[in-house]
Length: 565
Ligand SMILES: Nc1ncnc2c1ncn2[C@@H]1O[C@H](COP(=O)(O)OP(=O)(O)O)[C@@H](O)[C@H]1O
Ligand SMILES: [Mg+2]
View 1 (cartoon, protein in one colour):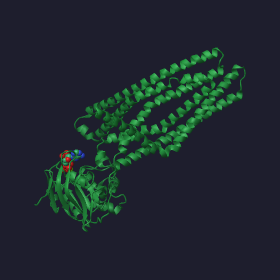
View 2: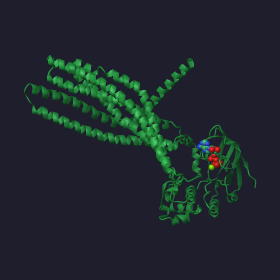
View 3: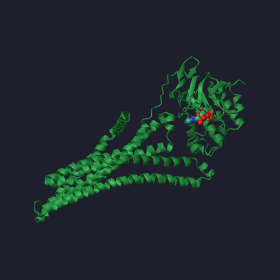
View 4: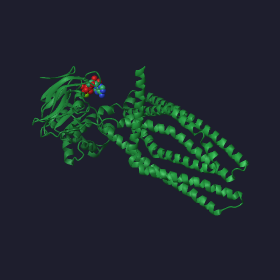
């Protein structure tokens, strides 16, 4: 019993801390934008003061008219006030729009930066569609919340206070009556808030699912077609949209119920106050002018209260989305602590390394050394752990047991970390080209690559001939994932992208699988002939490639062993 109570208490504390940390993040992120946000608020306040002033001027006009006089000057002032109010509205709208754009772009940039610098496995837990939703839809909600909602809330509060005291000045009893139902709104909002937040998270989750499906099925359109899945896919899209709609509908219903209850309580307040006003007017206790001020101001009190109540679901949406954005912000950054050993020639020393993605071990206590300058083949059945070993060496994934070190000829060594990628060239399995020109893709390996360096990389990867034959040569635009090139051509461009880095360590993960044997051998020969001689880890199933390697390491049954031919 005690334990569950404690557990509950801890949960509540954690929740409060979470909400607190969202707010801290939101506030700290908003700091640079505060002057502009304050300007929007100030304009809102000026506008509010102006409208109260206009109500008072109106009282004068009506009272004047009731006693038989019309003052043209006062009417002109009234007109000027209305125009000024319109101008202020337009200016603050413009500033808000610009601010919103800048603010949301700023958050997006920050998240993108975070995602590309976080651990690969942490990021991979999210579907790219989900990441995209968090970066677009959630960010938009948060940005609007800060840039539009906060100034609105502040303005409404100030409007409420000013109006209340103005009304209080003219007729205290009416003012108090107009506000008497305000606490009810607070209570209702508080009760519904929690439920609304849960619903809002569901809405955003279903949006993520929906986008993920679109993104995945479009990038695998060929598979959709090949398996005649067109109808299925369209239906599935409909289902996902329906799922989202259901959550949106539930949330809207909840928001509507709260608004309706609030509206009703305020209407009742208004009618009550109006009846009292009419009663006082009949008794000649107040003037027509006071009654008109009252009617305008009571509306002006109710409007901000109602508007404030309506902002509650929006505030809750902001908090829900902020939570989804901050979850990404909370991902730890990759450790990148290169100690700058001499990397002219590097090898790899693996000792007692164990790894499993889950409780299932993939690599169990493996040790081996690749000396600087060696060409080593890593072989083994599909799914045995070859790519996993490469990921560990590249520091994409991390092992709790054992060590991976980079060694040089001078006896220096350095533990694996993200920084070592600087001296590794990697050609991953599968098609990894980007949309853009062939040149863009190759230059990804070295942004400052000269024309000569590009040509050299093309020659070494046996790509020069086919690139020349492309309609615009190096400047031919290729689609997503190398669309427009054959699999083997895409692989060779990926190799050129790696070779242009001129790193001392090259890792090829089934990088030549789609090439015919003579081309493959040409590529391997090209790599071997490089000066200074580089170290190379090659994963391949081809016997002919293995013939070019100094040694062969075999992964089998979670262990690694030397294959002696
Ligand atoms: N991201 C991942 N999460 C969980 N398990 C994985 C992941 N990637 C690979 N595996 C599993 O690890 C094992 C080794 O995979 P891998 O190293 O890719 O094999 P291969 O030797 O074919 O390159 C396989 O059983 C595979 O299912
Ligand atoms: Mg593999």
